[in-house]
Image 1: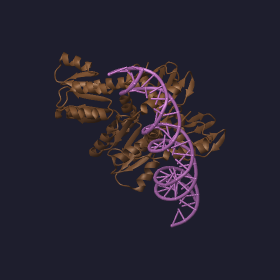
Image 2 (image 1 turned 90 degrees about the vertical axis):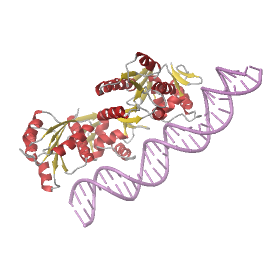
Image 3 (image 1 turned 180 degrees about the horizontal axis):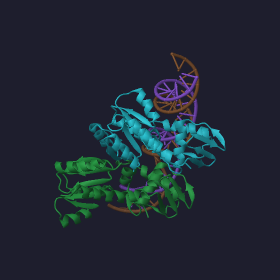
Image 4 (image 1 turned 135 degrees about the vertical axis):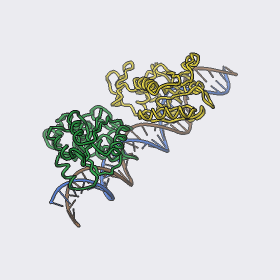
Length: 221
Length: 221
DNA sequence: ACATTTTTTTACAAAATCTTAACACAAATA
DNA sequence: TATTTGTGTTAAGATTTTGTAAAAAAATGT
């Protein structure tokens, strides 16, 4: 179950966000001032925390910093009223993962959350993945084939990780798009194919283990 | 995505049900008389159909019977105004899966729907299907006969899965077309025959277990 | 601002698969 | 038995899907 905490004092905004997230069947919890927010965030484990910068009691920056100092590693998205560069930098400095400027569309917010969840799940899974003669180190985004380092782009890397984690399963393009790109493309996109093509060229030139499942997508043997 | 069709002429009840189901994030469609209901149920694939017994146009029993005759295998829940044993028995006779008496609470209805969905998903979502010396792995789209891998095309694979899930039942071409091809039988298409032929050649060269049911279609013993 | 890298889109070729149509054959019916 | 109806089988042609390269767009670095 995905748990999200909203720390936001403006009720109207809080309600709106809560409504959208419930629609997406996340488990939602809310706090309406800084103190309460910090307490909730500390006492329970959330996958994502939406944190308003301007709050009564304790402001968002402080909360974020304190949480990180406590060792909290939830994915924190800062919410702020204006697109000000200063807060953005400061937010990331105190340990936020992302930053959304109000007003934002539900779609935008949910896209950001999905990115966060993806990143989170990558974080929590195995640090080092071994597949055949490949060694994939997630923290440093490095890949070795027979101890020879291979340079992959970010998307190639993420695709490889996802394939390995789900090895054996046929993965549809939609599934790959939602899980790696973070949202669903409308219309038909061939991005996945192109990335598979490149990945094959880099790590699997004989196309031995990245198999095409015609009509569905791809799978790793 | 779970799709539910409500066939109910009383708007107030329809609205109520629809509201509850949308809350549970099902995809909901509605029809307000028998003819429309039958058409919608036939033309599209629903996981669950909620079917009022008393309807203008065509009554619930008729619709249910006709749908079953067409090979429709949605989970059908009959709705009736009074708890009368006669209708209950009759309903099950014409092929309904469950029976709910009005007035019912949202909770009761959703519980019944969940039962239906579970039943449906149990059948279709088995990771591995075993039939005689065949092993069909749905997540990877692989088929083994006596541990020997057999390469099937997507349609062949889907056909095999459907046959196994419905083993023992005679399946009409129409049913196979609607459920596997996603459109309704158009009179003289013999696509199914060709695919059966190919499937037999691949997994059943002796034509032992894919039997022809003359005048109807095919079945797996 | 410009150059470089990465990602996405687009177009076209190649391949696999699906469908149609035809004919052969078997089963049912008169 | 002859006729009709339904199915098996085949192969050509149509369609769909994927591979690949290259251009366009977006992101990043200098």
